Image (tube, rainbow, N blue to C red; front, side, top):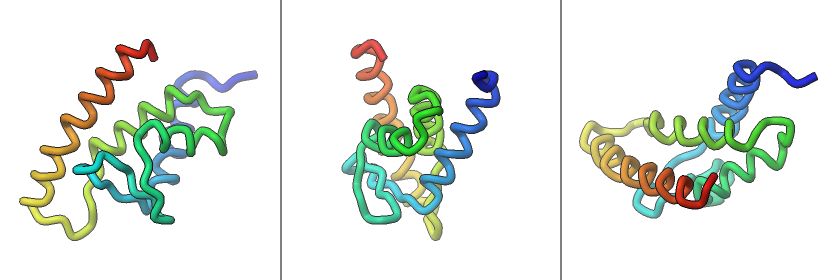
Length: 105
């Protein structure tokens, strides 16, 4: 029997935040920089997480990857660097969501 939707969302949240715990962001290049140095797009990152956890809905993983990007704050980030990161991430996420809607995801 499948877990209730709320439970699946919590599972996906835990999964995403654990997978991206040591990841960084190159907002200028619109890449998530994984702990192993691999630089992946949002779509590729979602696929990488989902590959190891096919029981979790891809859409939930995607939602939490986007949430992680919205809330990520690199260690030792100055106020100016944080403002720059926000300035770059916001249009990245907007473009991604617009493209996803257009593709019918």
